Image 1: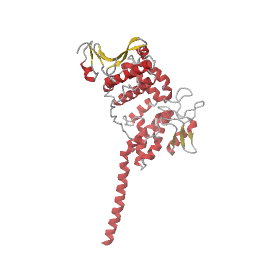
Image 2: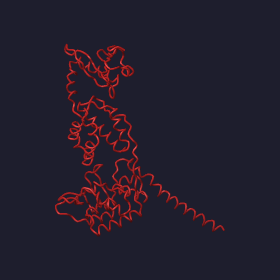
Image 3: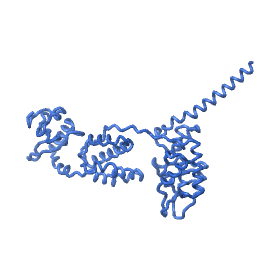
Image 4: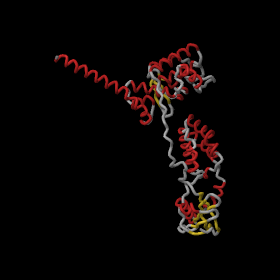
Length: 392
C-alpha cells in the first residue's frame, strides 16, 4: 500500500496501516484515515465556504471504528450542506478541559443532587482513585481500552473498581450532555463488572450476650461517651443504618406511636418501628440544651460523627473483632428471620426499596422452616404412636 491510496476503509485496512500512510474512503468523499507514528486517526477533508478544511473525527479505538467514523463524516457533510461549520469546533476540541476540571464542574452541578454521604464518597473516589490516573487526561481522549485497563488493574478491590467504573460512566454521560464528548461515546459501556462477594456476618445469640456484657461494663465505667454507647444500642435494637442513628433528631421521635419518622434517608422518607428495648435506650439519653440531635457530639450543637474508636475497643473486648457496625443491621435481620418473619416483612422493617436487597437473607429462612418441620413431625409422630398404643 502506497502512502496515499483509495479503498473502502475497513478494520483490516486500518490495522494494516503503516506510519505515514493515508487511505481515502471510496464510499464517502473526503473521508479518510491516516497513521502518524503509532496511532491512526479518522478525518474528513472537504470545502467549507470555498476553503479547504481538514476535520479530525477521532483516533481509532472506542468509540471510533471505521463505521462509526464514516457515519460521523456523513453527519459533518450534512451540517456543512445546511450552512454550518463543524470545522469551527476543532478549536473547542483542542482546548477541551481535562478530566479533573470536568469532574469538579460535575460535582458542583450534579453533586448537589446527591445525598451527603454519597457526595462524600464521590469526592473521595475522585481524589484518591480517579484523579491520580486520569486527572490530567483530556475528557474527550479517554477510550474504552483506558477504562478497561483501569478496571482490570483494580481486580484485588472489586467493590471499589466497580464503584469507580460507575462514577466514571456517570461523568462521561454528563460530559456528552455538555458537548465535551461525542454523543454515545461513553467508554465505560460494555465493560463487565466484577462479581462482588457480599460479606455476611451475623451475631449469634451467645455473641449478643457477650456484647451486652461489654456494653454494660463500658457504660458503668464511663469509658466512652454515653451517646456513643446509646448509638450502638440503637443500631442493635432497630436495624437502622449508622447515618440514620447518628443524624437522628429529637423531633423525629414519636413515643406515642413508638416510631422514628425520618424525613430523609438513603431510600427517602422512612419510618422505623421502636421495640421496648429501643424505647428504653431513648428514654435514658439526656437532652443537651441547644442541640437538636439525639446522639450529641463533642462540638456544640452537632451530632457524633463516627463510632469507630469506641466500637473497635468494644468488639475486641467482646471477642467479635470481625464484626462491623453495619453487621449489627444484618444481625437484626437474621434474628427476625429466625423468629419466623417473612422477607417482605423484614424489607419493611429495614426500609428496603427493592426486594432483591432483602433476598440476601433468604437462606437464613431455612432455620425456622426446619424447626416447624421438626415440630410438625413430632406432633404427628406422637399422635401416631399414641394410636398404636391404644391398638395394642
